[in-house]
Amino acid sequence: MSRAVLNSMTDAERLLVAETERDAIADLPEDDLLDLHSRVRRARTKYVKNYRQAASAKVEAVGGRGKGFEQNSRDRDKAEVFELALARVSRQVAVRANQAAAELKAERLAAARERSTGPDVAATPQDGVPAGRARQTRKTTGGIKKDASSRSAGARRQAKRDAR
Image (cartoon, rainbow, N blue to C red):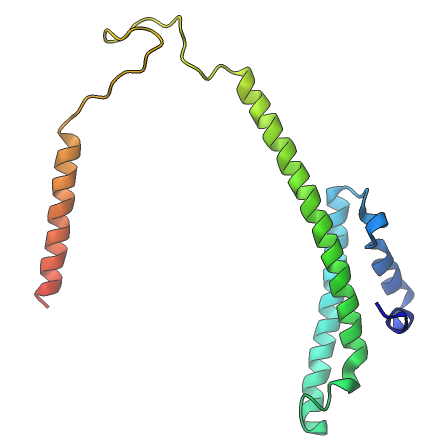
C-alpha cells in the first residue's frame, strides 16, 4: 500500500483498513470476522463503482479509456487497498470455517463411536443365519424384469426418433 493512498483516505477508512491487519483479526470470532468482511466488501464495492462510473464518463471527454486511466487513479487505488484488505479477511474467515468444520466432524465421529454400529453378536438367528453374519441376498425376477422394461422403453424411443 502506498502511503499517499492511505493519507488520502478518511479516518473511518483508515480505521477499517487497520482492523484488517493480521494481528487485529487473529483473535476475532467468526461472527465478528463476517461482519468485518461485509464492511470491507461494501467499501471496496463503493470505490470500484466510483472508479468505473468516472472512467466511463471520461471516455468521450478524453478520447478513450486509456487516456483517462491516469486521471482516475485515486478511486482505483482505494479500491485496490480495500481489495487487499478483503483478501486478508477472507483468508481468516476461511481458516475459522475450516476449524469449525473440523470440530463438528470430530464431534460427529465421537458421537458415532459412542453408539454401537457393528453387528450385534447377541442377536437371535433369523432365517437360519447365525448371529453376527450378514444375510445373503436372494435373486429375484424384479431386476430382470426392470432391465427388460428399460431396454424396451429405449427401443421404443429410438424407433420414434427413426420414424421422423
